[in-house]
Length: 249
Image: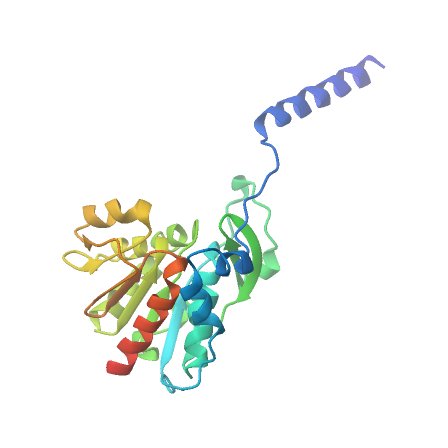
């Protein structure tokens, strides 16, 4: 009897500690409809709702380099537009690596092996199927790459040596490398921004400067074969800049 009482007290003590370690449940959201209809976002709203009538990128092949934690509209938006223009757009992810057991993460393992997780601001919202992994592609397979941002996608990518080496080789080939929002930090690890004009999300602009970039706080910057942008509000400028570069090159 005493043992049961002691066990119950231990469980109660553990639950009390867990309650002190846990925060209150409250999730910020970034719903697409709300974003597109927010005051000042008329340009990006019109960009998505204006029919695309010309196949200006027919025959072009574009790789989207991404991992878990990408900002949904920063991947789906440009990918949708480039496909509307006739381009082949493939989703490329790092090789699947399960988190170490002592991380204590709970992920849908089967889904995680073939898909990457989308977020809206900080909230996971869905999964997108991966076409190939970065170890399965070569520079000559594509005409351009673009990297979406997100809360932790760029950190995942910049820590993956195969991704970093591929971005570096792709840039050296003279083909288009493009990145939006936080994704420009991946370019730091690829060591391709020193002396280059670029932009990125506001709170990483100092990191870009420290890495030798010439940073401007503008919607989109094109410097040679590098295109960068700051935020989902710049998606129209970013996507059109990618289109124009591919047309001209």
